[in-house]
Length: 167
Image (cartoon, rainbow, N blue to C red; front, top):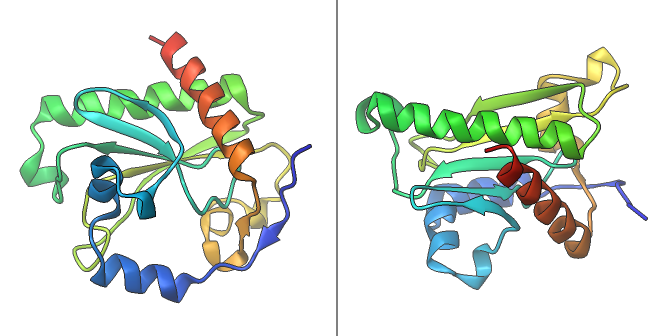
């Protein structure tokens, strides 16, 4: 059974780690056990994984494997379109696996922390009241979902299968 209560989130701790620690995406790619995430899919150039701190079930990140910080200056048009093709494909996979009213896509991060380019791909379930959608649905300040590691692994596997089938 899925338990999706909310738990408080240490936003200050995350900010400190993102500003003063190593790049979490590069550390994941190196296999650092402190930066393990549930991987949905990867290819030679990209990795897709579930957020460690999801505000919505299925919240995922799509990233180039190469440490890119500036979309406009460091990615060719072709590389950008390849990255967006994975975002689109994952969005379609989410709609096959989860009940989804809308998929939010955002590029967040900052030159002051979490500089590695990544896109947040976030499925919004049906029935969320309007005032709790959009930014409210994404904000960790309202708590993150309490989902077991086993459930996260199962969800990553299901999304990965659907993602592969979307080719």
